[in-house]
Length: 344
Image (cartoon, rainbow, N blue to C red; front, side):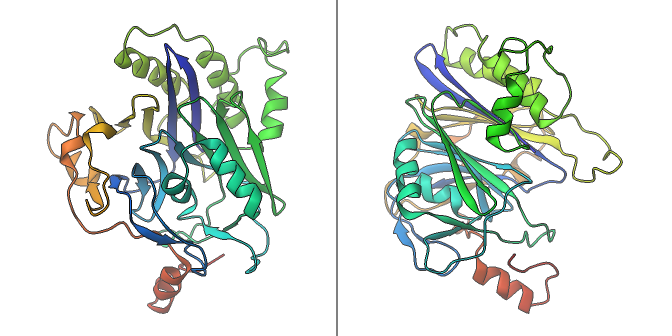
């Protein structure tokens, strides 16, 4: 599950909010990733690059970037899409594993348009990998947004890439695929239809509420007020803690939220199980080559009595590099007897 919302006219600033809805803890941490780090595609190693931009990212299991922003003001967000079908692996095509998919763009692109042009040029394929912790096979789509207010959504349906690229595409949730979400929205009052604004946790209902409320936000008087306003929208589309519904074992609750100011380069993080909000100002961080990959261990820091609060830009620590999930890693885990560790 999950929801992403862009507020492109917050008194001269562009903000994006994101809810992470999931049915279990993802051992989420924040990482500062500098320029100059060498990476590859995580599948066959044919695509190699060195990070052009530094970034602050939010990880799942310290194996995958699921949210984040780079120093150029490009942000990205991984959400669930059950209809995702990536197609049979073609070794002749440029490929990215799911684990590195978002990070590639944060490393290499300054704008949404840059990312779209690269994908269209290379006919990029995404390779599906099994979550080694649970045996689940993620079905995901990707949203990118930048400091100009531009937006793009990348989905793989029936083995083919579909790119929805426009600053008008401000909201993204989950099923159905994006073109169908846009059609469903037309039935809602205020978007051309007569149906009242829906209130359930269905992805299509959250889509409608997010689209409705982000257009009705008052102009903020400050950066803090802007962040608070967008958090109010994200809380409206958040999912409560609850028991799985009959026939829906995958039902998810909101486990954390982010609001990122792409103009002023501030990422704000809120855990739904902790009382305090923390934020990172990218201007306070050293992204120079050789400055090291550094981690803010939320699992230990947020668990401390009283927890973290406020600006945590100075609390990142060197704990070793971030190791993205790769096909080689999964094969090694499978050989070592870890159940479910296999490629899809």
